[in-house]
Each structure stands twice: as structure tokens, then as C-alpha cells.
Image (cartoon, rainbow, N blue to C red; front, top):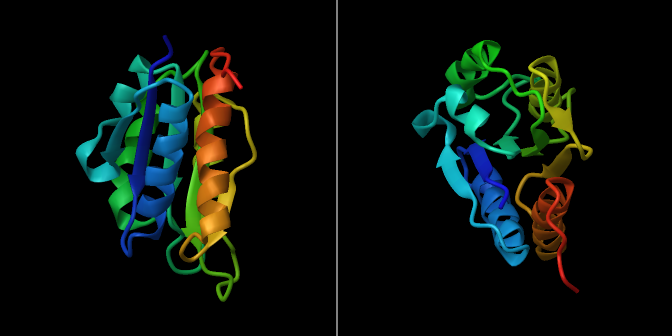
Length: 152
């Protein structure tokens, strides 16, 4: 059985809401994910998982949030070869770089050897009901990429 983690940073609750919906999708696919806020996680833990989902809101003009910086820097010391990964996050289109934190995390995962198997999911501020459904599908899809066939 694949082991999947969801590690995220959320300030206003928008990215956490996405993480919760993605976790629900992973569970629907028959896997119980490990879900942690980035401040409570160590990047070295990523090596224990087959599937990795990282989430972060975009701060300011396109930066990672402070809560994700230590985790991001720790990723320089991990080998993620053979892991399937995807990234999600909330953003605000009033800033020049919409969802740049998602792009930065994708680049870091690829740099560390992970196979990013889906396009990054970016949501404008708080996810709508339809976007929460898309988040659940995002979670189910990562499970499929990890080699688990979903019935139905």
C-alpha cells in the first residue's frame, strides 16, 4: 500500500481547506494520508513516502510563506527519486505572480528527484464548492499515480 503525505502552510485557512479536501480524496482512494502543517514536519520525512503533496499559499509578490521556508531549505538534503508528487495552494490574482509558491515547490521537488505527476493546483483565495471537488479529485489522482487502482 502506498504511503502518502500532505504537508502544507496556511495562514487564513484557504490552503488548509484545500489540504483537507485533498486528504478526503486520498481517503476515498483507499489510502490514509499523513497530514501535517509545514511547521510540524521535517523534509527528511518525505523520503518515507511514495506520494508527496505539498501545499502553500503565495505570500507578497510571489514568495513562499515564512512557515514554509525552513521546510523548503531542508529539502536540499533529501533524495526524492522514485517519489510521485504534486503541489497545491491558494493565491491572490491582485499580485503580479499568481500562485508562484506552487511553482517554487514544483521546481524544488523536481530538483530533488521527485516526479511531479500533475500540474500544480492554484485556487483564487478560498476554494469554492466546485474547487473542493477538484481538490478531492486531485488527491485521488495522486493515489492512482502511485500505482493504486481506484474502483469505480
